[in-house]
Image (cartoon, rainbow, N blue to C red):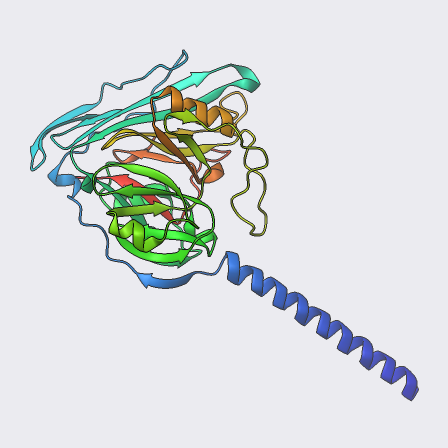
Length: 337
């Protein structure tokens, strides 16, 4: 082999090695950003009553619904006396001196236009029954567990997925009265210790102002669905993230949202979607109108798609994702004694 050929071969090898190194660096960077867990803070779990001190009813299926806006109640039920007073519970209801939960399964349309969604009407004696929890009780990025796993480990009676804060590095994140992140970016949701809720612009209201007003929890996703009792209708090309793989979310999709009717009276809605002849999901316009119809004065959209999950009394109520399987999430919003 001539000296010239040797040099050419060496250049090719070096070029290939550099290319592989660059590709490897890119792949590692993507994995580090979207897959590898990064724990910033280990968080003490919220103090809640264990299930044995209240009541756990057996769950015997998801029930059925054959008409628009109908509720289903299974025959499984339980009564118990506890620190919360007399508790009655079945697959779709929970009642104690502090918490009243009623869940309905609803169906509209048919065939490819069918929508299946779940509404939880919840009235609380105190805002202290409305809590949040992080996956694995850790704050950071890419830390996930199924909604049902987080809920069960925190003795939740009821839970929905939160805003998946761990997928992004911006937004205002206050949970159970503690500020974890203060990077204003979008319209947020604030829950307060007097049982009220409001939507706000993160770039116009500081975290210090919110804490001074008695905020207990904030969520950073959106968009706002209902403001002052009126459904918002300008959702063209809404996007929440600028992260890898982001897309507009205004078309029909699985949804999770929360609305307020009056202090300590909330409606939580989870819409299934992407499941042929079972549920196509809802557009943002349809979702906003639903909350207005339910009587919400304010409502807010949380993380949807495969994350959309409703948990109640030890079981997942809805059919998450496109195959009825849960997807790991960063956080939940839940109800407990």
